[in-house]
Length: 261
Image (cartoon, rainbow, N blue to C red):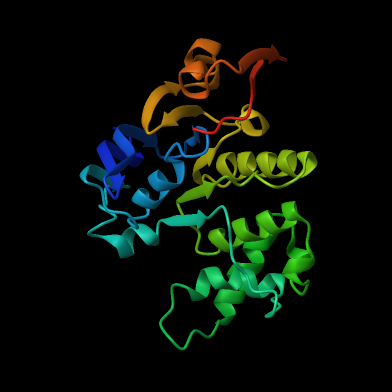
């Protein structure tokens, strides 16, 4: 019997009577690398917050490994590592890389939140996974954008989640960093058996690694392998006419113009 990491049925969420997502149905298998693709305003972050149990739907059902995030939030949060698109860290309070990663462990503790030796070892292990174990004492704000993203992924990994949720992890970093992070996510999924659900407006940097992609703009327009979804007639339903798709080395890539919907 197939085991689902995430199962969503007929999910509808509104903000002040404005529909953010409508009648979304989505099944993600345990161990899968799934990308949710769509333009700004498509409802991608809203979908992640529903999976986390942070936004209650008007109707519909969400399950994470069989648990309801709205009624069994503690169980769900122990299964998920979450990397938001934006992390607000004050420049007035300088934190080391180690302190940022330890936040992932301390967030699950009751006050006073004092890191144990086990927490420190888990944080070091998470940094090793992302290839930054030598950065423990470095100032987080002095790192490059790509290095900061890897540190934030390590923070999400410190609790050893079964499912990693990533909100636009490749936005705002250079092309080389995008390639490094994408390759790292593939290794995390294949070698460390972490299920990954990533939302993005640009699939190209990670297209060769994902198992399936879901095209979202308030509702799911298509879901399947990248080869099945990355077609001009399908993408144009969401992105309009400024879409071109080409194949290189057996992999499909999409060129999409700026879209504001």
